Amino acid sequence: MTIDRRTLLQGAAALGIGGLAAGSGRLLDSVSTPVRAAAAVSGRVVIIGGGMGGTTAAKFLRLWGGTGLKITLVERNAQYTSNIMSNGVLTGQETLPDLRYGYGALKNVYGVNVLTDSASAIHPDTRKVDLASGKTLTYDRLVVAPGLSFDLLPGLPSGAYNTLFPHAWAAGSQTTLLRSQLRAMPAGGTFVMTIPPAPYRCPPGPYERACLVADWVKKNKPGSKVVVLDANPKILAEPVNFGTAFNSTHADVIQYVPNAVIDHINPNNKKVFTSAGNFVASVLNPIPPHRAAAIARHAGLANIDGRWAGVDVLSYESTAAPGIHVLGDAIGTTMPKSGHMANAQGKVTADAIIKSLQGLAPDPAPVTSSACFSPITMSTASWLTAIYQYDAATRTMLASAASEAPSISSRNYRDMGRWFDGLMADTFA
Image (cartoon, rainbow, N blue to C red):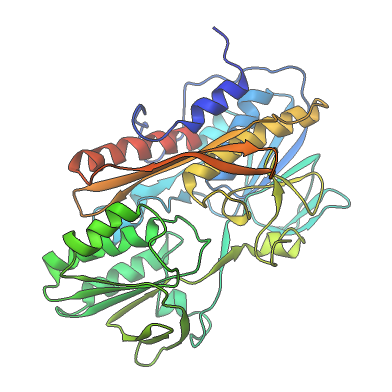
């Protein structure tokens, strides 16, 4: 039986709760999936960013487009560190090396040219990309999947996130720093975290972090508190299960404060001044507002409030510059900013680029999905899933099905590992 790309896209949209094959390990460098030649397709595709979206696009361009495509992935890091599951580093259940993934499969199996470099400028008029190394790449189609930049919250000095008050919303050295600060916090201390106004990366992520830290301090820092200062009016993801977590499971530890818009932070005494009152921290974890990464903004792609890149969601082609596709956390759409969603967008983008190089229109009815598991304690979890379909009237992706787990359970926690390994194998193996 032959499966066309649209059927595969729809199948990928269902990837999430259950039915996933485990990956071959945390550092995936080989795979048995063969590259299959498509109808004659040729062209040069450059991809900036080797995260969930960019890597998926590169892989499936090769799988569906065949060997006639010349694909180059530009990524400054030799390995990708997953933001998904990185809250577990704070509790010692994960380590950063456990969350790192290589580009060996892209290079050795799919024949993608992977450059450890960074893009310094994009020239849409000449279809060229300048690299920090001094090289220049020419493209027929460009994919920009650069991730995010983070605003500096009022009152904090430059560099504060890396040295004093880590947001740890991009897995890496800040995650390790926050872990060290949490371990050094005295019993009876107060862990204060802030949640920025939506949209931000991983809607359930901050609530998950609050729950994991709360469970950890119960066991390791008796008498401590976790204060959650949410700039939004309510819990934005999995409200039933996170509501249960805040009001029951962790009611003796977590203080949840909605509508807490930050005015400023005093770095000397770790005092956070908000519209809902003022709070003093022993450990301060300020998650700041997000925007598209600098390379997208400097190229003129961030045409939504100067913060997000506008795209046609049939192809993820920029509404500011033809021939450039933008995906993942940097775009402004109705879809959440999540690793699972970036994976789905990478496939839609790959399919659309192949069609464009054949002189064809993109799929008129793409389907994407977002799914994730959210730890509530160090041994139980909830989950969230949503499927998005194209709405021609609004030219947006609308959620056709969205749900959260009917209950918090240890089984969900066990399934989380299978979901994660399956998603990362689909992206990096």
